[in-house]
Length: 139
Image (tube, rainbow, N blue to C red; front, side, top):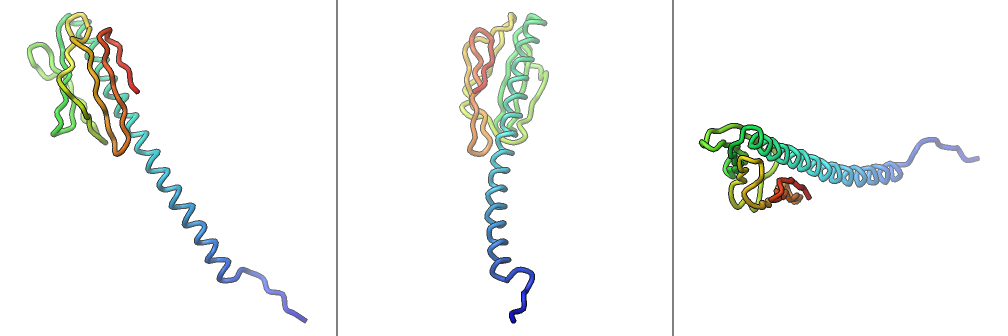
């Protein structure tokens, strides 16, 4: 008569550990990718908000304002027509690419020209457009 054993064999346990390791490594990669996307979206929203606030300030105060990007410190700076620093926004996760020149808002709140730049976090990139109508679009 054969004795019945309860429990799992060493091979079964090793296969289970291998499967769990693979699933865990896939999950960590997905989580890191998700985290970068969330950080980029946060950067984009804060930057677009800064640009919109600057536009509103130029309309409210009837004076020109400009938004400048300082690559060395990954910081946006808002200055009034007398070059007084009004506000800053530090990008905590990434950087701005393709920054050509300052975004200038005239005293009526309209930008001097159309602007476009990219915000980048790792391999992910979003583009911010400031149209001549004053509309800020993020893609």
